[in-house]
Amino acid sequence: MIKLASTLACAILLTTAAATPVLAAERTTDPLDSPRWSDMEKGMLSGAPYVFDARVRVEAPTTAENPLNVPITIDATALADVKEILVFADFNPILEILRFYPDAAPAYIGFRVKLQQSTPVRAAVRTGDGVWHVGGTLVNTVGGGCTAPSMGSTSSEWQKRLNEVTTRTWNEGPMSGRLRMRIIHPMDTGLIAGIPPFHLESVVLSDEAGRPLARLEVSQPVSENPVFTLSRGSNAGALQARGRDNNGNTFNVRIPQ
Image (cartoon, rainbow, N blue to C red; front, top):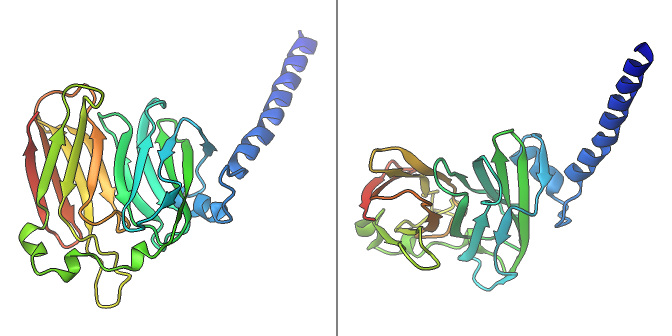
């Protein structure tokens, strides 16, 4: 019995030792080969455990002609128990783009972003076990998206429509369950002389009973007049959308089914 227990203990030690290099390899090998990945890991993920995971799909154009409006889609519905999606760009002057909490909605979101130069755009998806699952894609662009003034900041009309919300929902067909929401806002980054940062900070989508379906924490790199595409999944009935910007302006609208 002593010999058997000793043999099992050795086997456990060997298995653990063999597993450690595999995890280390996953932690250090960036599929996009970015020289900034080490900084991203420390700064954005705070040293938490992570793996590069092909189930996190980040879709964007390989070449973006307009750096002010680069379409991005994040689909992490292949993962279970998603708690948070953090989207960031390695070479943007403002790294964090948004955080998405799909409380009772599928882990899917589409939006547009400003890019300052060619960069990996990544989504880190935190699951219930505390592990970040990282996916990404490389976007080539002429740049300057974060340091160009918004159209709203140069218009005398934008204040009349600030935080005006328009929506569209699909109840049948291939896009059934999708919700698209457009919010009028200049989304100024604060990187242009004389124009302070002015941007949406939060958007919360709830059901008719007030239960949150999805929450967004929004940063300056999201494009002017943001358009968010979400999936409401099996949640039926009307929805409520409310939001706030960094100057305290708010909106609260009902979205019919």
